Image 1: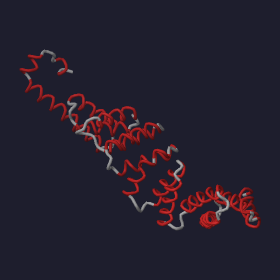
Image 2: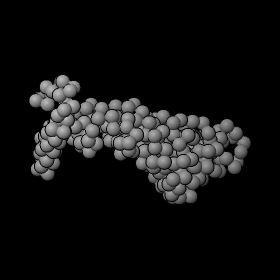
Image 3: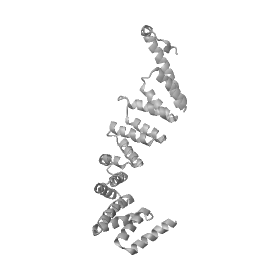
Image 4: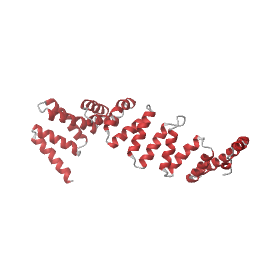
Length: 272
């Protein structure tokens, strides 16, 4: 308070060395107090002391970082978000971890759109960060916004070519956005990585089933649909969606024996 009363510019200039000394002394005192509180497991006390340091010397980066972290830990989510945003706004201080921290905060607040927006910003700001890219893809998936995944697909797969689940997400994204050929290619990659993948076999089986229903004269499409759907059924015998797809296939082909078998199994699952 005594320092804040020094308003006269000439007085401040003449006493600048003394003022700087006192400022550093006070700042270091609160900094020591804050670090002791952290070691003692008292985040609230540490937070208050770091705020004192910040009010005395607002140029200390580590203090700003600590205040953002402690605000989050103490449930002061709006303040934490503001502090992380300020850090991101400085080219010298910004780093990918702050994007992730903000996404975590927005998730805790169930602000799904803000999670998406900060991850999109992170993708723009750090285009080579794999963790941000994959989290952005997962967020698009959570929101059912598969058209957002498509532009990211090639880069994601390039960075993690052996990730079966990623290939499936990409395949499904192409599938629901109407690009069957790309979807088929990625379902095939899923199966190449894991021949017993239910999602891969069912996904490509469903594509062939749709194409067969559009051209019921094609024995090739019929056989491919049947082979992949039966494989999916073998992997997961109680999956209703696969049985329903097989029922459609057998009804269309006129295979009454297999249709009855599938319908009986569906009835059993419904009763259970």
